[in-house]
Image (cartoon, rainbow, N blue to C red; front, top):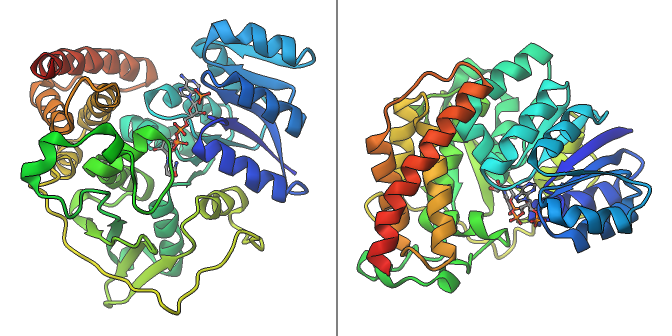
Length: 386
Ligand SMILES: NC(=O)c1ccc[n+]([C@@H]2O[C@H](COP(=O)([O-])OP(=O)(O)OC[C@H]3O[C@@H](n4cnc5c(N)ncnc54)[C@H](OP(=O)(O)O)[C@@H]3O)[C@@H](O)[C@H]2O)c1
């Protein structure tokens, strides 16, 4: 029985993870659940899975959770959630908190000897070198949940690393693939939240519309698999049927296909290196059309900016992620325009002077500075909109 800490249980990935765990209840159990502020869903999940340890970011909501779950130990607030991550006995943690908030709990899980099933790409983008060092030190694994990286993980199983020419990440292109750049300034939040092929949480849905998500994934692929920026390519594939590909030096390309449902990569990460029989449907090939297009970096400047951040290295990927997260938050609140997101990221990257970040405290300190810098850049953009 593999015991799992589920960080971000009330979100899109969290709910899908619980469906997988429920189906394979002889294989997996839930050791702890962590959420932000959706107490109603958290309480229901804890009751359903018999969980005695829960964490909730919103300290005010903790009292309600404690009342509803009198026999559970409730950890309230960010510092307590980090303690839960370190103290709870488990073999694996699913990192599915969105954004920067997920970094410390995921790191504490790894540091205390759990494997990580990683959905929270922002954590890996911000602190990939530290996560890898900690995983090596503890002899633990970081298994991707992102469908593209799950596809690459599978494609890389068919050959030697030295035989790989490049990784090819597929991108749906988002809802604005065919929209003219001249119309981008008037894009509304509602339009940007309409993803053509996936149903996900709001931040990643906006990231998919700007292609900022693909930029984060390029950086994530670098840290997960160790390939340089020039060996990671992005191709637009509007149907999202092929989740990504590995090209070997003999010209063979291995593409991974499975239904567009995050339960597939979640199941893969939870059960690796085994393959368990999935009840979640099968791909139907008759009638399927696959098409591919190059990415237009002028229309979607966050992708070239992400490559640039990766090439510069150091804290630049972290600045990219933080500036993007802040800007997406403001876009969702209607306070900056769609084009303002890439603008804010570019300005923050330009103004960053890269301090060394040898350990987690130094990284968190630098992250504080990066956040203040990005916030200052954003305030200019907010004023422009108002
Ligand atoms: N959704 C997908 O299909 C998908 C695919 C690939 C990768 N990912 C990645 O997976 C991560 C989660 O995405 P999602 O779509 O599942 O997001 P989501 O639906 O917005 O869920 C986010 C989760 O994080 C929790 N949370 C937020 N702030 C928190 C905090 N300070 N402390 C503790 N928990 C906190 C939320 O809790 P409350 O709701 O209770 O506030 C919720 O459980 C993201 O990094 C995303 O990029 C998602």
